[in-house]
Amino acid sequence: MSDGVIDLHAHTTHSDGSASPKELIAKASSKGARSIAITDHDTVDGFAEARAAADGFGIEFIPGIEISADFSPGTMHILGYLIDGESPALKEQLAMLKNAREKRNPEIARRLERLGFDINYEEVAQLAGNNVIGRPHFASVLVNKGYVRNIQEAFDRLLKKGAPAYVEKARLSPRDAIELIHGAGGVAVLAHPYQLKLSSYEAADELVAELAAFGLDGIEAIYSRHSPVQRSRYSEIALRHELLITGGSDYHGSYKPDIDLVTGLGDLEVPYALLEALKTRAIAGEMKPGEKGIESAGA
Ligand code: AMP
Ligand code: ZN
Ligand code: FE
Ligand code: FE
Image (cartoon, rainbow, N blue to C red; front, side, top):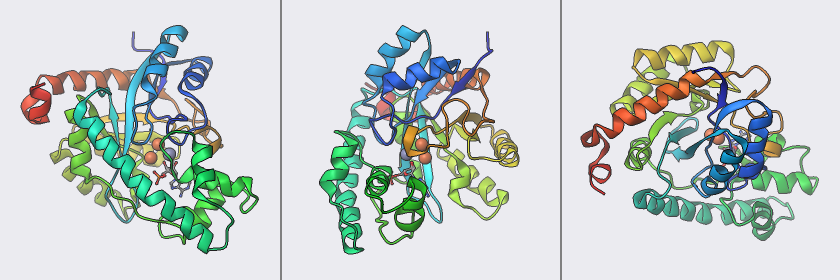
């Protein structure tokens, strides 16, 4: 049976989402989803709670992650699916990425202070809880203090790339991000390609060719903020390079209030068949350990 809708991109309180893993699973179930992936930034800490909740709700949980890669002019995020959250190599790299955030985040707070905002890092950390702290948490504190009307305004005026309080953080290269995911037994997918801010689909096609040579497995063509034209053009690019097509909402709860789980901006519909193809590719990858690095072949 390959019927049903799914959502392969969602964040929880373990990164910059506002719903706990359990709340997210409950919501996915109430929205009629058959499967749901959690793709928190740089952490797998939501998996255990999500697994237990998914069992209770009779819904399929897909372990995922979202990793930021080095790229300009825009943003490159690589999604990893069906990863082993216990992989030592993965854990080690995630600790390194957390470190890079802990270096960057206080600097964002200092910039905001210098710009005249009464804000300190402790209150941002407190809002985020003991989790991966990201820019949406800074945005939320700015909203709560009445400096901006909403999260989007905080990004547009202060936090987005190139804005006055933006601070770079150390990232993995695209190739290292893909290899990290493969090393943990997962499938690597280019997230929301419109955020790369490339000048044309031809440029996107060339980039995808490069990433495919590093082992990229798929493209998130079906994305809440992609127009129908973007969805079909990025799907064509995926097919041309024999890559998977995936889809998801990028639900963040109150941190991205216009995006709903499963349905995105209202017109999102990700078919279960895409997940079947993903699983097939994951199995095919396991049978070719030579292409996935020594670590996955060994231990
Ligand atoms: P960080 O990983 O801490 O740099 O934060 C990245 C997250 O901030 C993304 O996953 C989005 O949730 C959010 N974000 C980044 N850029 C924007 C933007 N221009 N507008 C709104 N949210 C954004
Ligand atoms: Zn996010
Ligand atoms: Fe992203
Ligand atoms: Fe995301």
